[in-house]
Image (cartoon, rainbow, N blue to C red; front, side):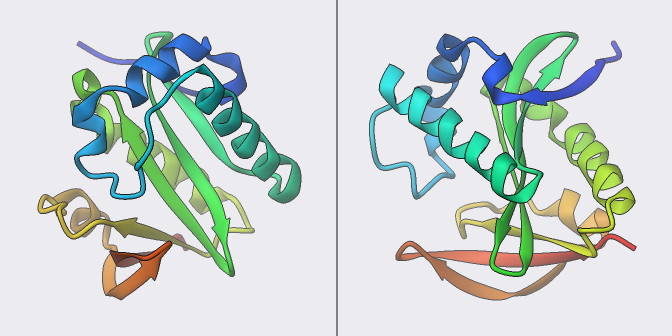
Length: 157
């Protein structure tokens, strides 16, 4: 089965979809900064924060759709001089991660603002094959909001 993958703004997704996604305990397993319970107000704040990134930087996080169905969110967020890429999928869509990642990296390669992409992953993430196949290099560890992450870098050109 082929999946038509589309990137749309988070504000175009029904908030209840995001709430159900982010309330799934399987999603939190590899998100050490997720230390609160999601509710309607959290979704509203989250979407507003991501829209602020679009307004400030001209780029930000998208909602990912597969065959017009919401399957997760992620995208590029400016962190200092880096464009960091994040990907948070619904558990029933974990198998789409590589396709979504490749499509996002194709976008980055065409965008002159993004000479490289960084990825911050918690040490609990053991399956790093997709990043290695793309050519991302582990460049060390970094502390973010008091939590240690593995940092990878991928040249887009």
